[in-house]
Length: 66
Image (tube, rainbow, N blue to C red; front, side):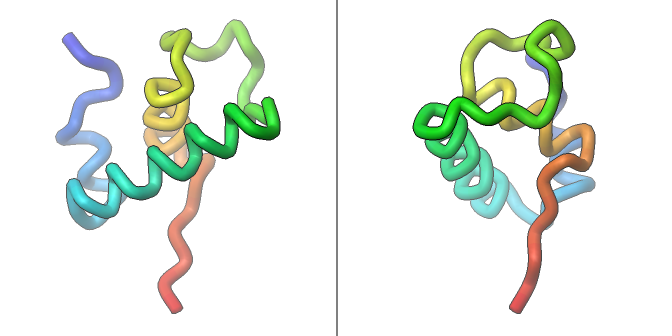
């Protein structure tokens, strides 16, 4: 089973498309800056895409609508 589940993530983000865009930007940012919002041992995933999804699930990433 994939963690976190898509159903949980869609309650925090409006659509799948917005989720994909948000997570891809965050994972690129992680790669470039090596800045993580949680401790290394708190992530279940080893890849930045999975870690970005976990951050969305824990409400560490917020979307600002202009």
